[in-house]
Each structure stands twice: as C-alpha cells, then as structure tokens.
Length: 245
Image (cartoon, rainbow, N blue to C red; front, side, top):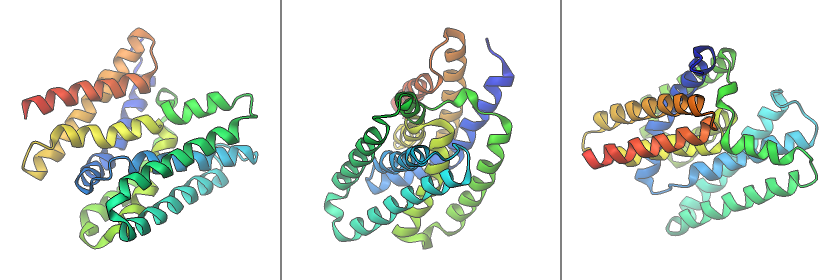
C-alpha cells in the first residue's frame, strides 16, 4: 500500500506547493485577506472548466491560457478594489469566490461528467501526479521564489496579486482548491505565535512536509481520498504547533 512510486511524486508535489505557499500564506494572513486564495483558485478552476466546455485538451496550452487569464483577471480586479474599498476587501473576495463557484456549476450542469470534473478541481488528484508533471511547476516556482525573496518590497499590491494568481493557477491543477487553501493558511496560522520570521518560515515548511507525508500514508493505508486526509493532517498538526507556541 505504501508504494513509493505513487506516494513519492505526490509528496514531492506537496513540497513544491509548500515552497511558495508557506511564505505567501504568511503574507496573506498579514494582509487580512484570508480567502483570496480560494477566490483566485476558484477562478483558475473556472477557466479550466470553460476550456473543457469548449472542447480543449485538459493539459493543452489553450486550457493553461484560459486558467491563467481568469485568475489574473480576478487578481487585477482585487488589486483595484483593495485600493478603492480596502475596508470591504474581504467581503468582495467572498463575493468573487461565490460568483466563480456558481459560474462553474452552471457551466457543468449539462455535462454528464461535470460533477466528477468539479470534484477533481476541488479535492485534486495528487496521487495521479507523475514526475514529469513536476518539472514545469518546479521551474515556475523557482522564478516566483526568486522574485518574492528578491523584490517583494517593490512588488506592490498589483505585483503581489499577479504573482499570487500565477502560482495558484499552477497549484490548483496539481493538487486541487482545498489543498491550495490549506497549504497557504494552516502553516501561517499555526506559526503566527512565533516572533521571528525565519523561525515561522522553517516551522511552516516542517509542518507542511509532515502533514503531506502523514496524510498520504494514511490515505494509502486506509484507502481514503488523499487530498482530504492531507488537509485534516495539516489542520491537526497545525493545532498542535499552535498550542506549543
């Protein structure tokens, strides 16, 4: 059951997700825009569903363009609304999420396989990840991390949202909406009691790596959905770490 040829690439995918999501999640928490990742992730998923409705290949470049375009459109909109109505930004993020989610439901309503497709976007299929899927994501995340740690003070609001849209688009198609949200927010919440930023980063990475490993092992042993179990393990380990702090 604990087959490294299946669980290994899945765990590496999780580590890649954490590489960018832990530092960006801490920034999301600091900005007080907790649900921005859900909104952007849902918009990227909406782009994938639009591409599917048009008959485009799931892994084709047209689908990637559709997903990135919808996510970036949402990022532009949220960057503008943050400048104009900062006091209601979180509420506007929630409205955008609901519109994207219901839009996806409308688009798949006449598709006999639409429910399964929507489930894949939400929960993800991390166990189906193969090593070749990770190469382009690793390259993209390396560029993002270089920009984040090298120029984040100069990115501004628009730069942050656009960078966020790019990584979330790639992450959603790799592990699903729920794991994207959990990977961003749970390590940030669990480590917020620690004062030193480097320590928060290290602990966030450690928590995420253990959460993915434990979730994958339990899902394989008990034959349960991997994405959902990983979310629960991240939450449980996060609560333990928060209690220690």
